[in-house]
Image (tube, rainbow, N blue to C red; front, side, top):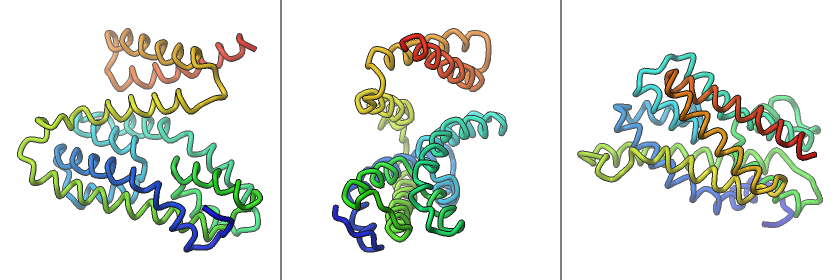
Length: 235
């Protein structure tokens, strides 16, 4: 990574990142096929929704015939962090017009956001839309292609369940939780683990009295409130 902020530099800088998109994108394509999505439907979801964890949740909830409202709320909660990321990047593109800012925010992901924050260390805290668009489009294209490849591979697998792919969603979220805990240095490790345990207990208890999707939403909200309370108490 260097100080250049050109299209070519953006594509070059994002290359190491997109390799992770291939595995997860193919897993999504295979699971989408298992849930009776066509290759075109899986591709359109990746192009329109473009949110890895949310796409897994949407496919799972659609397969379970969940209400559309619950799907929309779940997706919004999962992707709420993207608003904060976009607001962090927006001041760096103050010299760009509204269209450039909207395009940059639309395709921003966790990975390209992290890449952007790292790039700032090499450019004197400067950013240009050309570099960010190239990085975003590179990641976007690989994700879409991996989805199509996964959906096509899924058609050749008679019984994907024997591969344990039905556990992919659970495994992915366990991985995301682990990465969040080990990389977030702004909070004590015991606090993060404590909140995770609290949410788990809430989820198990609430599933005894309400549908699983509502239990997820309720446990998430309670977890946020609990986290805020614990942080204020610690200070």
